[in-house]
Image (cartoon, rainbow, N blue to C red; front, side, top):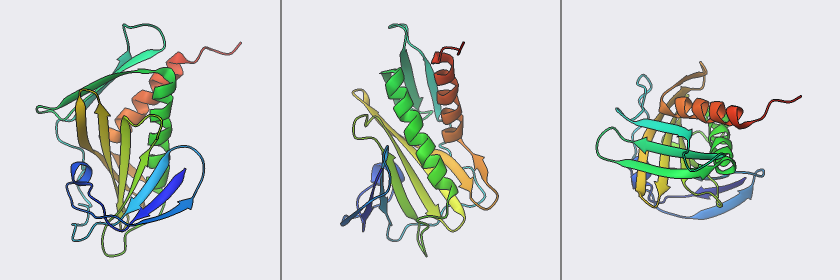
Length: 190
């Protein structure tokens, strides 16, 4: 996993706030990549509210295209609907990115001092799914960006209170569904 620090960069689509860029890479571990940024003048996360995008939904199901394929759809509950078809290995990549983001969200690593700090999780080989984890004080907020040939959507994925280890929101439902579907794909051991 690569961890990159960005002084400021634009993540307006993902976070609705302006950021600009400067780079200082550091090696962390293999698998999904992560990058870190700290926004200027951004508001602290709302500590009491589940920050999932209202009306956002997803669907992950086996595809009619054949065995070992999945259809994945995310909608913001209004106009945006983004869909794609993926192999089992690609869905495993989604799970790995989400699991790394969840594990990171639980830690006190890279917590913003005075302003939120954002870390982005993604895979260079399968760039359809990006997870941003914004940390401030004891709160972590997750944002999901999903991009295919049909377009791009970013939804607020939920919150995590690191002190109480309380998770709420769309992100956790999606991660559970991905894990469940992958278990169904694994043949029972004899």
